[in-house]
Image 1 (cartoon, helix red, strand yellow):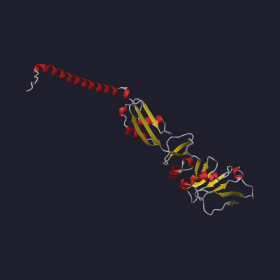
Image 2 (cartoon, one colour):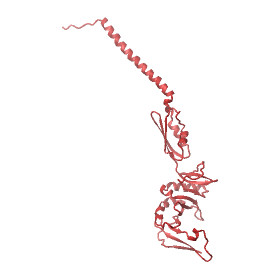
Image 3 (cartoon, helix red, strand yellow):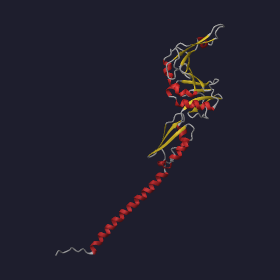
Image 4 (cartoon, helix red, strand yellow):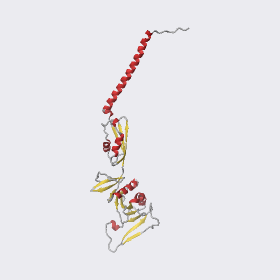
Length: 287
């Protein structure tokens, strides 16, 4: 029978005390660490170290970066952890020209703001100043001395109904075509209140209808490519598609002598919306 080694309680007491002391020290270190972290967190939150340092704005064009930051209410004095993305989003989207805004925080101290602006589809002149017209047909309150060249000038649109309709048509028009337009004049006629006259940057004029404008106007570059570079006249795309050359007497601003007749040559062109059966070389004579 094996003999068991018997350890007296007097020998075990020092070891127990040492183990308990180690546990107590570890617990104390843990508590001190937690306390230190809490104090450091409070100091960090109350100090400028927790403020926003970088504000990045993307997507702005007409609305300035400073104005967007002011709408958002965020500065380098704003606490990073107190940034309310949803509230900032609503404040920025309250601007008439901004259709969408998104807010993103990047640790440790960067706030990124991305916006989408409403497209400016034209400028209208009122009381000597130009007002931008947005894609929904609304007019900006702010005034500008001269248009920015990013959209055509709308002339004579005194009725909001027609202004909104041409705004919608311009919105659907490809930017590659709308950039070719200098001015759009509302030119209603008896039986056709939707007639408009366009002045193009290349010197041509275009007679069209508001209601079919976005459908037929994309064919303009193709129509112009078929014409002589030195030709001057009106391209009709409201009914069919043909070119009416302006007589030289009209270009020079001279009236024809008595007994002479004015002639304007209408030249059919191939393009979208051309009328079938239209003969080449059609000549209209006016006496």
